[in-house]
Image 1 (cartoon, rainbow, N blue to C red):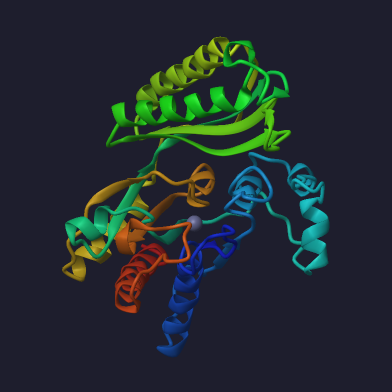
Image 2 (cartoon, rainbow, N blue to C red):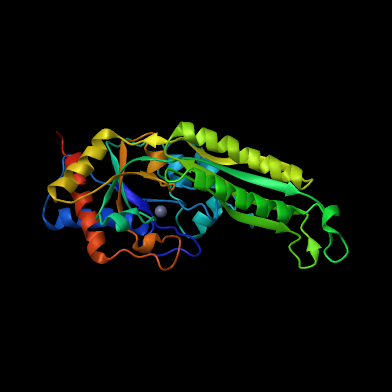
Length: 333
Ligand SMILES: [Zn+2]
C-alpha cells in the first residue's frame, strides 16, 4: 500500500498529504506505462480526515483501519457545529461500503513533505523516517469569573485568559528545554465570553507535547500537567484537563525502512534517518501493517501554510525512491 491524505488545514498548502497520494498514483502509472507487473498487488490509499482540524482525532480513517477506533464511533464524531462525520461523508458520496478493518497488507510506505527545516538545512534530497515521536495532547479548561475590566482591580480578578497566556509561555519554555528531540505547544484557545470589556471567565485550550523517546515524553507530560496546575492555582481558577490524543513513540518496520534506504542508496542520494514529529496516517497503520515513511524537503521548513513549497524536481526524486522501495516490497522475494 502507498498513500497519504488529501484533506488539509484551513491555512494549509498544496503538498501536505497530496504529495503522498499522488506518489502512489504516479508509481502505478509508471508501472502500467512500462508494462511492469509486481508479484504483490499495489494499492493507493487516500486516508480520510488526517488533519483532524474539523473532526477529532487526527488520522481518524487510519485509526479505524488499525482497529483503534470502531467504525461507527469514527462516523459519529462531530465537528464544532455538531455535524457528524458519517453524514458529511454521505453528503459528498464518500461513505463507502467496503470493510475498513482486517485488511491484510504486506507493507505500507508513505511519502510526505518534511514540514520542518532539517532536509533543506543539511541539503539532503530525502530523509528516511524510521520512527515517530510520541504525542500526548491535552484539552485544558480554566474557569474563573466574568468581571468588568474597568472597575475590577487585578487582585480581585479570576482571569482565565491571563492564566491561559501564562500557560502558553511556560509550555514554550518547557519546549526549549527539550530541543531538539522534543516539542511542546499551546495552539488553540476558545475564550468565553470573548468580548472587549469583560474579564474572560473561561478558556478551553489545547496543548501537546511530543518526543522521540517515550521516557522523555513521560517526563515532559508530567511537567506539562504541573504547568496547568500551577497557573490555575495562581489565578484562583478551577481547572480540568483531559488527554484527547495519545500516541506512544514508535519504531517503524526494519524491512520497509531498508527498502527505502536501499532505493535511496541505489540512486546515489545522501539521506539522514529521521523521526517524525508530526502525526501521520503511517503511525496508526504501522500498528497493523509493516510501515515506513519518506520525507522530501519543505522550503523554509514551512507547512500548514499557503506558502508551503517543494519543487517539482525535489518531488520527483522522492517519487523515484518510493518507486524503488515499492518494487522491492512488492516482489515475492
Ligand atoms: Zn500530512
